[in-house]
Image 1 (spheres, rainbow, N blue to C red):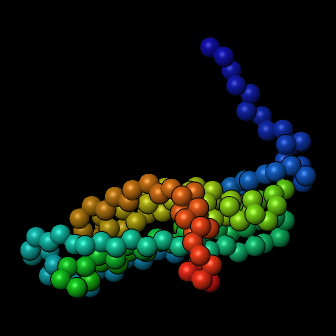
Image 2: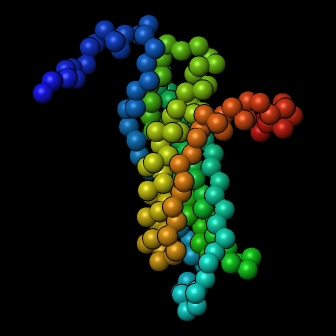
Image 3: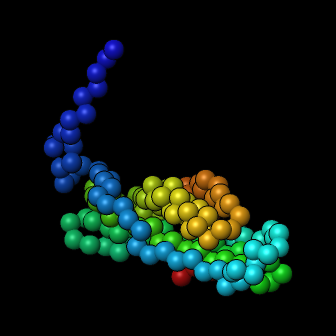
Length: 159
């Protein structure tokens, strides 16, 4: 059996080297609302669920950036809200050595893809604890979303 040396080499994280590090991951905020409970449980129901996602970033010192992935699940039956679940999954990343375009791609695609599995678990857990039908969020291709946003005409891009 071969061994793999996992010792970090300090030279690889020098200031002039391209680096992306995840320093911390955390739930910044989460909420769950179920305005029709408990009466909604008296009958079978299959809600229509709409999922929305957005990201935001905040720059800190020393090449550190907070990236927040917000996922909202809004479930309705007959235009009445059954539940609303939202999570703001955040991470602090060190991003250094990249040009502005590369940096934008990392913050809009790579970092949210790291955060998504954590946010997915939190949303599913909130919905389950609300005694609602199971919600399974499918994997998201953040690279494809970014490519689509970049290909959109300038007047249709969100400001």
